[in-house]
Image 1 (cartoon, rainbow over the protein chains, first blue to last red):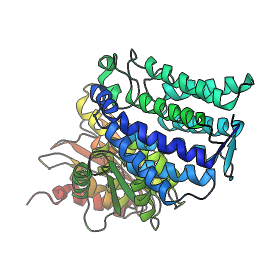
Image 2: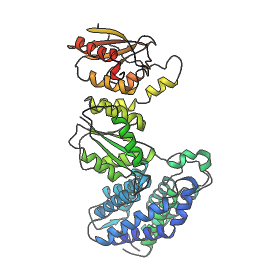
Image 3: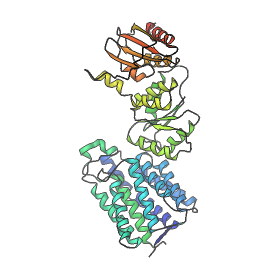
Image 4: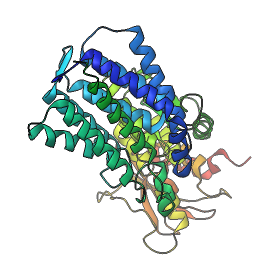
Length: 215
Length: 239
């Protein structure tokens, strides 16, 4: 059972994120067409594909360098608020990661918390605003709780991914208070937030990658 | 002179806002960069904004003016990922009005802080013109000292003191070291600083309103005279 995440595992995470985004792109766009501008799927496919291209061209370096490169790539290819927010997530993770080729449990926990806090600071959103924070915040809280309870990293990340999915579903009845969907007011209720949906995919991809025992 | 970066979801919108604002200035103009659109469509791109800011590194600071919500978000990320370190601020002013106010104010040689204040205040003139009743006028602190020079003239422009003459007045006022203030004595609005296009617009001065010009400083009488000539000549608008 792996208690550290190697840089290879992180790269697998990002590859899986890209392939899951591609697989679920139509659904993401459908969610976005209900309450946004119907481009979240397309934008995320473009951004994650660019990340994969970047990874395939450069397999060396530290966790810090990898995550920073991922963040900058997403900023310049996803576009709009999602690009800035996912970019911020990875750039803040990078800033709070070791200049090493692996992360242990508490380092991963720190980096993920920093990433989520960065997104919160950038977008000024909190839980209940019907944004990606509704998936991300419960995920890192679940991760910390599970690690504090002495459970293993793989199991704790699985708990984080489950919390992200629950958080994603919790956005359905909410009225959006941030982002483009907030212009719709009450009409935004009844639809899952597309940003929360892609964020849940991000966490599920992490759980699946570590689940393959890539220590 | 400070530089200006226009951040918009639409390149066409940013270009049009820039052209409209540049109508207000003559001769020298501030350096402006546009960071608009993302991936060939509507959107904003923090990396494009960062390079626009870096591109203006030789200016005396940069004001970033944004349109809808995520433009602010992308701009704040751009401030973090840019490579230059000189001062840059994100304006909270409304896009078109703030762009106009900032271009005029920057052309007059104002500091980044002053241009940012002008841009931020850019809705007040519109509010003065659309809200009726007391409290609509924008009062500013007045200097209790006796003005070194003053004059009063009637505004002859049929369209009143609109943006173009106001911008010309700001440019003229920028040539003097005296503090110049204008009051619309007919409507009881002001005094406002002659270096603020937004302040001047908030006078809501119409044709035949009496304008009082007060100046305080070493070249006060020359300043009052220059402004007086502008008013007398209808700001060059009457042929």
